[in-house]
Amino acid sequence: MISIGLDIGSVAAKGVLLQEGQQHLMMIPTGWSPRDAGEQLIDCLLQSAGYSDHAVHNITVTGYGRVAINNAARTVTEIKCHARGVAALYPQVRTIIDIGGQDSKVIQIDSQGRVVDFVMNDKCAAGTGRFLQVMANALGLDVSELSDGENPEQAVDINSMCTVFAESEIIGLLAQGVDKGGIIAGLHRSVGKKVAAMAKRLGIVGEVAFTGGVAMNQGIKRALEQELGCTVLVPEMCQYTGALGAALIGSES
Amino acid sequence: MSNQPTVEDFLKIREVSLMRIKDAKEAGGQKVVGIYCTFCPQELVLAAGAIPVGLCGTKEEPIAKAEEHLPRNLCPLIKSSYGFAVSDTCPFFHFSDVVIGETTCDGKKKMFELLQEIKPVYVMQLPHLNKTQASMNLWIDELRNLRSFLEEHLEAEITDDAIWEAIDIVNRETAAAKAICDLNQMDPPPLSGLDLLTVTWSRGFSSNKEEVINMLNELHSKYATENQDASPSKPRVLLTGCPVGLGTEKVIRIVSEVGGNVVAMENCSGYKTLELQTSKEFDDPIVALAHKYISIPCSCMSPNPYRMELLERMIADFKVDAVIDLTWQACHTYNVEAYEVSKLVKSKGLPHLHLESDYSNSDLESIKVRIEALLEMVNQ
Image (cartoon, rainbow over all chains, first blue to last red; front, top):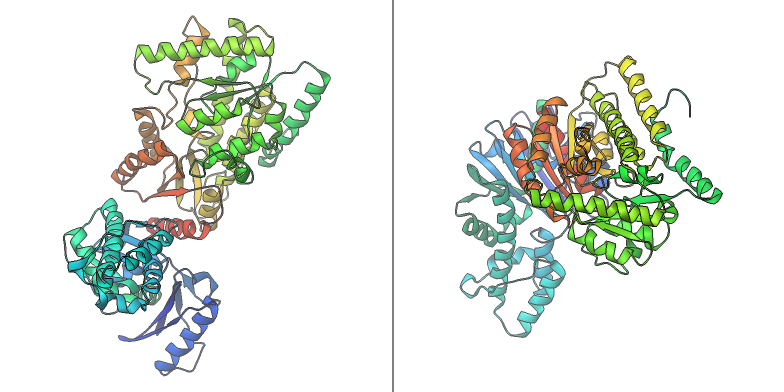
């Protein structure tokens, strides 16, 4: 039996297909239509696993676009899916920090991978992938270039939490001739502080995993470790933990 | 209204009251007093022969108008109340001869100053400490001042006997409302979250206390004797925090959309005041009223241990599976108490969700995912 898990996020749509211990991964931009992205993902995943029969469906969907997928067997929140996915990768982890395109969240789980408590960012882009994307634009960079571009020795304080004001602040710093790498380090610190504060509100228990697209950024990982005073584990498939959790939940149902 | 009232009949209370108030005012003589808060001693209004009515303040629409005068970063309840008043879109405000406010928070206190330009407003200075004689004396004094204010503005005499009579009526109304809410201790609960809100919130707009007491009692006996369907039980949610009314019921709606049930509400129009009866053991009815009203476990009281005691009891009595604590944006006192509430709920081993929101629909999706995750925690 195969189980497909989809995580339709605001920026990227991620899919995991599980088939007798084998795992196929696929990611495409969500674009403007979460439904089309979902359909396309399902097709690609089935193809890569060598299936052409669309009737073989056990599809579990999560992410903000979860309700848009027509042939989903079930929808599950991204909170439960990340918990399940991380529990499979790191059984020892009890705290999950997930930073995605439009939200960030901290999830506490127990030894069974069950959600004990969680907290999500308020309606504001501070501390999300979106924040970093806007800042990267202001610096003339792609968001993927931030990680290698930072210069921690020259780190400046970015005081604005608001994305719009932070962008103005950066333009001002650039005008003053401040080192770009220092600005990037400051941005990473700003996101790290914001998300770490959220995590501390919940309380840091056990080992900590960091997931979501933003987890690929080493600078944010370091900033989080500094703020939390502990090591943060980033799974290789950090963008797929939600989709993996969905596929696992599907295979267990 | 029919002998067997339904929840829909409660929905009609506002409209029916309004027609009656309009007619009674046009016929001459009938005085109406607008009230905003459960701290307002309605008994004094009744004893003056006037009609106490709740004023509008639970809808998003008039907020833009209010923001012409008030800062944006203020609680939506204050902005909505003020917006309704200045735009003359709350008919109950329109027909009110006077309005009673109280110093339950800084935002309201200052908003009432602006409101005085439209109507005579009596702002009760509510002490925030309820354990000392000095604060009790201040509060008793405030009730006496309110009595004089009402006598003067309504051109009526308020006798002790009339107050005692009103105390009896309000005690009976409170008991009847509590009995309705207590029905939901059953599983499955006879009233949906929205039904519960409709009944408890709408009763505040009634122009006739005896009538609304009858409606509550009859609705109670109808539900108490009706055969319950044996539908599988859904996660039972307790809602606490800031006041909720029709127009701002989004959290209650979402809970039911994602498969749960708000079975009880520890908030102003809900259970917060329902255990409180005015004692008839006192010689002076004003002193009796003062003791009851200062016991209300609003987050403006400091300290406020009764709220935690009440929540603890409700969690047990209503067999609650999860607690949602709703704070309207910029309500500092409820927002700070949210920490204590979360500690209490977690100590019971129950899932807990603190939401900070406003009256708009802009965060429906993000509230939905949080509530869904909360119910997943119940079901896992």
